[in-house]
Amino acid sequence: MAVDEGKPVDHERRQRDPARTKIEILEVATQEFADRGFAGARVDEIAARTRTTKRMIYYYFGSKELLYIAALEKAYETIRITEQSVDIVNLDPVAAVRKLAELTFDRHEANPNFSRLVSHENTQRAKFINADGGFPGLDRPVIKMLQNALVQGRLDGVFRRDIDVFDLHMLISSFCFFRVNNQYTFAANFNRNLVESSRRAMYREMIGDLVVQYLISAPE
Image (cartoon, rainbow, N blue to C red):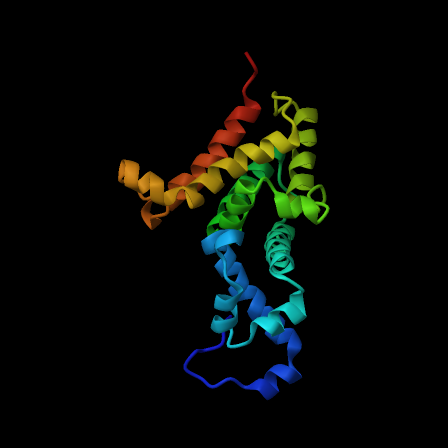
């Protein structure tokens, strides 16, 4: 969280607590990059909002590029931590897939900056993710849990579609991503607020229904 602009800068505290300073910088930088993308974000603005200096930011993170990558990595790590908290061990495959779809719905809604950062990175064709050697993806908890549910569902004869786990993840994520990231253009075009509270439960149930119905239906 940024330091309150109404309070004087406590340089001594910053010197004693560099870890806290780095966290503050990264939080503000994440918001700046989510709002403006890499090209539009300004390190001077991040420095002003954290009551620090551009020089200090570069001291901690090295460069604007490395600060941006750190923000991306932190966003992905936050998602992984959220995914680790879900428990589907005792659920049948249908209930497990539904719960994982709802988890994805919830985390996109709770972390709009993640969706916006990913959107900006896609406009750059994953330039920075690729430059960093790629972020861990195969170890995402939700991928492993979806895969286990798919395997068990096929063994039980419940899931009749032979869908790849990454395609299933794409199907779920696309709905959740669109709802958060495209809410403004959708509202402008159709006068429909995708994130209003009165529709939330319906949309959350909708993605679960869509995914489950697809998996249990027989291919043509």
